[in-house]
Image 1 (cartoon, rainbow, N blue to C red):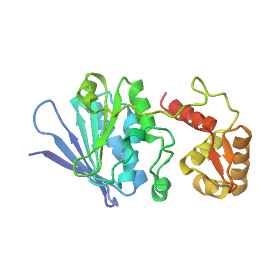
Image 2: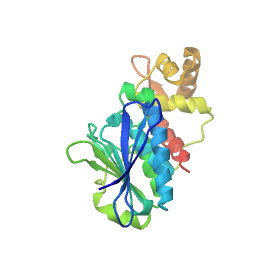
Image 3: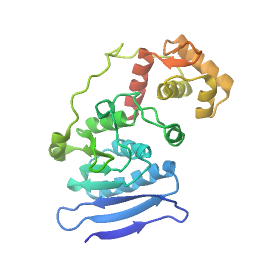
Image 4: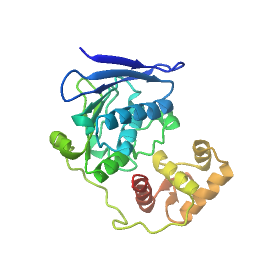
Amino acid sequence: MYANRTQRDEGDAGIGIKVAVYPKSGEPEVSEVSAASPRAASAKFSGLVMERVRASGGRVPEEALRELIENLVHAGFKGVVISVLEDGNVVRISDKGPGIEHKERAFEFGFSGATPEAIREIRGVGAGLGIARAAAEKAGGKVTVEDNIGGGTVATVSVGEALKATEDHRLPVRSVPQRKYPDAVPKMNISERQEKVLITVLESGEVGPSTVAERLEISVSTAYRDLSVLEEHGLVAGDESGKRVITPLGRDLVEAIVNAWVK
C-alpha cells in the first residue's frame, strides 16, 4: 500500500518515528527512522523532515518544525507519525503521549509541562510552542494543537494557501496574562550567560544557585553572581525560601529573547 523505506543508523536505539510524505497523487512514501537519544532524535528527525519539506517545494519554516519535533520529548516519542502534506506547506505531527491538558495555555511563554527528565534532554523553558507559533506567523502561517484520537496530541504547522485547510482547528481565544511592558522591554545590560540563567529561572518556577549551576554546567559561585545581577535589574526576586522567582519584567524579557531567536 505504501512506498516504504527505512533509515536506521548503526547504534540507534529504541526511539523511532514514521515520516509520511503525501504527493498530489498516488500513495504516500513512508520512512521509518530511529535515533539513539531524545537529544539526537530532535536534530535527526527535524533534519529529515525538512529535507522532505524542501523536496516537496514547501515553505514550512525550519524553526517551527524543529520546536514542534523537540516538543515530542514530552510524549516520550511514543507513536509519532509526521505527515508532510500540501506540497510541503503543511506538516502534521501526531503522537500517542499523555497529551496537553491545558491546550489553551500551551503557547504561553513560561508554561511548561517538562518533567525533570525531559529538561535534561531539551531546553524545557516552556517556550517551544510559542517559538513555533512565532516562526510560523513570520512565514505567514499558523500552528494549531488538538487532541489525537485515542490519546496524545496532534500539532500542525501550515503556511500559504494550505493554511485555509487548518483554520477550522484553531484553538479558542486564550486569556493572555497582562504584560508589564506591552510595547517594549527596557534594554538590559546582561550577558548571554545571564540570559540563560534567566530562562532557567523561568523554566524552574523557583530556583537556587546550585540548580542553575547544574543545569548550565557553571560554578555555583558564578550562578550566584548571575542571579544577583538579574535581581539588581528587577528580572528575578527572592522568595521566602531564599530561591529566586521570575518577575513580570523578567518574563517579558524572556519572551523578547525567544522572539529574537526566530527573526
